[in-house]
Amino acid sequence: MNSTASLLSVQPAASLPTALSVNVNKVALVRNTRHLGIPSVTRAAQQCLEAGAQGITVHPRPDGRHIREQDVFDLQALMQDWPQREFNIEGNPFHNLMEIVRQVRPQQATFVPDSEGQFTSDHGWNLAQDGERLRPLIAECRALGVRVSLFMDPVPEAMAAVKALGADRIELYTEPYAAAWGYAAQAEQLERYRAAAQAALDAGLGVNAGHDLNRDNLVDFLRSVPGVAEVSIGHALIADALELGYRATVRAYLDCILAARG
Ligand SMILES: CC(=O)[C@@H](O)[C@H](O)COP(=O)(O)O
Ligand SMILES: NCC(=O)COP(=O)(O)O
Image (cartoon, rainbow, N blue to C red; front, side, top):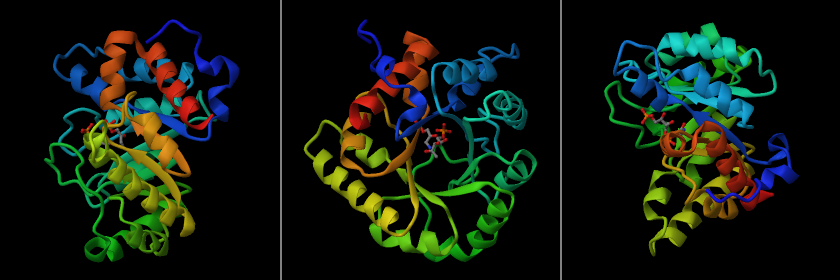
C-alpha cells in the first residue's frame, strides 16, 4: 500500500455509502490449528473496528472449522462497545444458524444455503425449492429485530420472490465476478450484477455483496453495481492483513470504497 495519507482523512468511514463488514472466519481458522488461543478473533475484530470497519461478519459453520459458538458470544460482547457498528452472522437457517440468532440477536442474519461440510459458499438460494421453508424463519428473525439478507446469485428475476418472502436484503454472491476480473468476461459479469442489483432495488430490497472481493476487484464492482449498502470481505482482507496489519488493511479497503463511491 502506498504511503500517501488515506483518502479517508478527508471523509470519515461512517459516512461512506457502502459499509465494510470484515469477515473474521480465517483468523479463527488459524487459531484452531493450535490450542493456544492465538491469533485472537476478538482482538482482530477490535482493531478492524478501530480502523473504521462498519461491521464484523462471521459464519459459524456446523463443523466448527473456524468460527465457533464461543467466538460468536465473545464478539457479541465486544460489539456492545460499538453500538453504531453491525454484527452480521451468516449460516444455513435449516442447520445451526437460528439457535445462534435467537441467543445473540445480531443486527443482521445472512441466510446461506450451504451444506454442512461444504468447502465454501458457492451458490445462492433456490427459492422455488426452499422459499416456503424460509418464510417462517425470515419472519422469526424480523420479529426478533434482526434484519434478514438472503445469499443470492445475480438473477434479476429472483428478486421479487425474495421480497415476497419478507427478507430485507439480498447478498449478491460475487465469486463469478471475482473470477472474471481482469479478463474479457469482466464486463459481462458486471452487467449481470448491475441488472440484479437494480432489480433488487426496484423490488424494495437492500443490496449487500460478498465472496472473493479484494482490493483489486472492489472498485470496479462498486462503480458498476448500484446501491450496494454493505460488502462483507474476509479471505482476501485477512490475507492482506498478514502482510499489512489489520488497521492498514481496513483503511486500504475503506479507501477503495471511497474511491469508488466517495
Ligand atoms: C457466504 C460467503 O460467501 C462467505 O461469507 C462465507 O463465510 C465464506 O465461508 P468460508 O470462510 O468458510 O470460506
Ligand atoms: N459474505 C461474504 C463474506 O463474508 C466473506 O467472503 P470472503 O471475502 O471470505 O470470500
